[in-house]
Length: 143
Image (cartoon, rainbow, N blue to C red; front, side):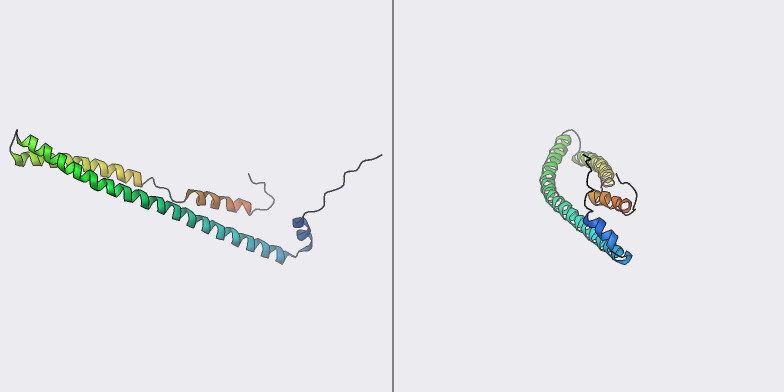
């Protein structure tokens, strides 16, 4: 008894490749590429919308906290100014408090600028777009 393993039936893709003309195959590739590009654009839109929503909510909360914090700092600064005013003329005390706040503002501006330079745009879209060209090269094994 000889057992021969039957060959698997050719897949639909193999049958189509055997029977379709080059023009039909190129049309399929063009259509698939167009679909892929539309999906990438939709992914980018979804990522932008999600990022913008989160940024909007976070910005609103930070703005409210900033206003409240501003009032706290104004009253603390006035308290410091009047405390220093008990030791020296009030004008000099106000100037000292203003210089301290100027230094704090410069440090915060420097740190904020550094953080803004590190913002990344669309990481997932960029990653998937970078994978498209290798997929279009037939005969290569993609990892």
